[in-house]
Length: 465
Image (cartoon, rainbow, N blue to C red; front, side):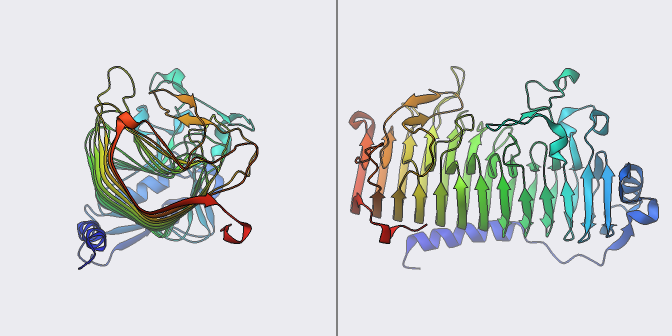
């Protein structure tokens, strides 16, 4: 191929797709939870019948455990085993319990549905899994709801002691498809130390005012493909994390995202490396941050491509991390004990954005941003909310929030930046006086090249609403 960028994109896509392919499975056994006594009335707990159906599947499967429609199946935590796929029919709903006693003693096992060290597992069928997040709200607050915390158990600390919705821990060959995941009380779909994962044709609908209700968290998991997903959630929508091991070969395509935090975020848990990622053909709508890197714990990020992405970002209350940046690439130590890390070889190509704030690129003294490329980008800056601007957001850790005037691209601690075919347009906003396309500290930014870069005021005819 003549174009090296197209070749790189093709190579990375092929790596992930091959990694997640699997041979055809034999015909599965079908077991209905109704045949094991599940009532599906939404008030009586169906935990025992559901778990009995799962346990009755032959070892290794394949086995489909079916939730027939209509029905609302209230349950405490249920545990999948190898070879089992839950099939929630259209019109059927799995309801997560809202009591502490509905969940295991160990905090890390607090899920409505969880698989541990299993192979060939998943959930699909066209129905719904609902975490009943409203039952975990202690006080509604227009800025950010106050949530229940089960930290009195000693199982966890702080205010994030709530159950997640679905988890796969130490699993291989995971498929989540054609399912709607509603109202998680905490993280929605959590992939932990798992391998060969396919997530496709799912919808995630979180409460937009509930904190920490992430969409998909890919933690220490590898060879993951996410495609044709609709994610609408208060906290980070797609969030790779590296806590105990690296994250590599992640492909995300053809998704629609809205988030009150970051639509796409690497970190902030970042003790190990992120490598070989592709994000392509994604629409990001009304989010507090579009594409974000929060590298804080010593793991490096490299070989990452963002292509064909349409971004719209806006300000929300500053209690939520984010300051309307369409692109946010930061690497700084979380605290005095944290290591500095680098972000390198990251390409942004064919990006369109409408934003209330500029692009923020910030490395650190021993954790530089290296070899970033912005190619074929069209960025429009305009104010349309009443929230105040003029802040750089380094959270978590680092310098936290810092007063700073708005610029088109704000840069520090960079070694290598290519800007090619990039147009920046500005609103004539008398309150903000936006007129600075680039701002950087000369002593910290080196090796920058510009080709066909332009900046100027927009006219109404050029605005892409």
